[in-house]
Each structure stands twice: as structure tokens, then as C-alpha cells.
Image (cartoon, rainbow, N blue to C red; front, side, top):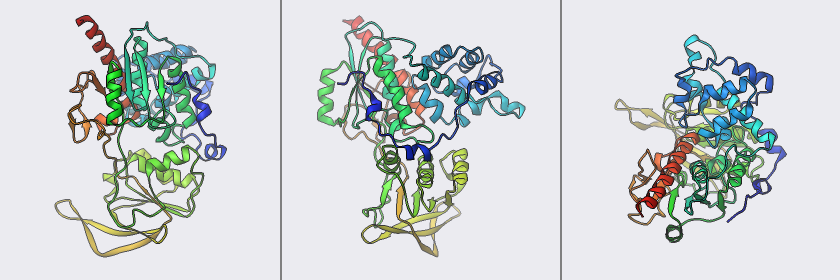
Length: 447
């Protein structure tokens, strides 16, 4: 188990990647932040607060920026969302808090809530201050958290604030899950994810890295700890099941994003095909553009109106130069020793809404890299049969407490909801941390 680890010492630093992946939304300076904060109406029944899954008191933290109380602003954010810095960058604010801003009623730009939140959190980090609260008095209880992503981090923070020990087991060399490895660098830089997690280490959260928890290891953990939180996320990205998928030059979006964030991938040459049309597909396509690809195609079986990516992500990808190809199915990966192209068939929509190949409309496209982004499977196979209730591979929980069908097990994040936003995982973890502490306290009361 680690001490308050210097995570930055583990993180690769690449000036080239930093230059290519500049902030999507640049930081506000002090004057701009105060000016923007004064635009806020500080609504009593703030719809922005209700739209945030962690229910940050948005008017309160913005008011504190307006009055120069940046420490108080950061505290307000962190009381509700321990990963307030990451969420200020990675949240789709356009459809959450800012999407609910009352300014829309007056045909005005919504308050820049995400950038104001980032301003307050950046100020806290720049000051060198720790979290504005401390660990609670030790209860003697200890919880294992499997997976080091946002849900586990948020859960661990709530446990430590209540005096419960928290040990996070993660299969990778760095903590943070998708925040560290899977969110586009122009949204959330790897270093910023780690900076935030260092604060949790200072709160007493412990980490065990490079540890894949299988059924046998889970049984040991269950015997050693008073409770277990499952924050394992989702599994591998689906395959197409077509010829040529074994060729070098085919990867998946999460591995591709993790590759350039970790410094393993520094450039991309030639043409790239990204298959899929979700937000992760968009992130991978934009990354390929910024890494130097000659052309980037995003290939999707249906049309623009059917894509799961947010409309603002689609517009951003167009601005970056990604070319979209609708109603196209990739039927084969072509090449000899490595990927050389894809075989594409045009699809047409029948009267009942199904898709069928259009006769005589197949063709080949020369590409040197294919990136799959067609959804992820579940990652609950390591749970021994009957350990917790599952539905379609997802862990079933009580949404109010995060408790599973097995009283000792709690869960949250993508392994329970099938893949939503970082802030949703934080909200799950927060509820579970409170629920676990209450359950452990109840055990004491019953003893």
C-alpha cells in the first residue's frame, strides 16, 4: 500500500502532446472570472444546481468568486463533488448545468459555470493548499475499493471524512480510471487528473497499483475488509466480428486515447478510420487529427440524428476536420501484414426502420489505422457466481445507498449504469461512501 504518493513522478511529460492538445476551453483570468460571476442571477431555485448530478451549489460558489473568496468557492464545490476540478473540464456542461441556465430564457449566453468552477479549483491547486477538510476520527473500519476511477475516488473521500479506512486496488500503474486514461487530453490533461488525486492521498486514501482483482483475490479482499466497493467500470470495446480484425493497425478508442496520453503514441500518419459515433469515437477521431493524420473518417451505420455523441461534440469534430460517413458498414479490414484499408458497404433504411446492404454499393477505402469505438462490454465476470445480483452484466444496486444484493458489497459508476458521465460516477461513489459508513455504523450499533 502506498503512502501519499507523488503521482506526478509516475506521469510521462510530453511537450509535443501538450502542444497538440491545448485546452478546448481556455482558463479564465481573474478579471474575466469576476466579470462572468457578476452575470449570474444567483437564482434561489437554481435549475443549474438541480441539473448537476452531484448538486453543487452553483450560485453559492459563483457568488464567492464575485466577492473574491476563492477558497470558500472551492470549498463549496468540493463539499458536493470531490472531483470538482476534473468535472469542471470533462463535464458536458452544455447539457447539464449550463444547459439549464435561466439565461437561455432571455436569449442570452448561459453563465460559464464550467469555466468558473475550473477557475476556483485551479486557484486552490495553485495555492498549494490541501483539501479544505480533514479525515474523521478513526473508526477502526476498513473498506476495499476495486477500481481506481471516479466512483471509487469519490467513495473513498466520503469514507475518509467519516474516519473509515479506504484502500483502492487498481489494475493500472496510475489511479484515476478514465479520468487519467480515457478522457481526451484537450478536455482533461493527465497531469490535472493526477494533481486532484494527490489531494485524496493526503486525506489518507491508500492505493495498490498494478493489481488485477480476479475471483481469488476478491475472496481474499472480502475476508480482510469490512466492506467492498465495486467501481470497476466497463470492459473491453466490442469487436466487429469481421475478417482482418487481427491485423496490426487496428486498435480501440480507449487504448488509442490512453496510448497518446501515456506518451506511447506521439504521432499518426496517413488516413484513419474511426468506427462508431459516440462521444468516445469523437474524442478518438479528433485525437487522430491532432496527432497528424492526413485524413480522419468517422464511419457509422446510421445517420447523424441517430448518433449518441452530443451535438456540440459533433460540431467540434467537424471544425477539427473529421469527415463523417453515414449509413456505412465496415464489412472487412483489408491488408497483408498490417491494415491497409477497409471494405465499406452502403446501407439503406427499410420501411420498418431496419438497415440492409444496398446492392452494388460496396467499395474499399485506403487507411493505415482503424479505431473501434462501438460500445463496451461489461466487466463483472470476475465476480463469483451469486456474489451480487447482476442484470445484463451490470451490478444491481440500491440507488440511494449503492448497496448490492450482498450487504457487504456496494457499487457505483459505469459497472452499474452502463456508461454515463464522470460526474454521474462521482455522484454514485459519493452516495455509496455515505451508505457504507452508515452501514458499518449500524453494524456497531447492532453488536
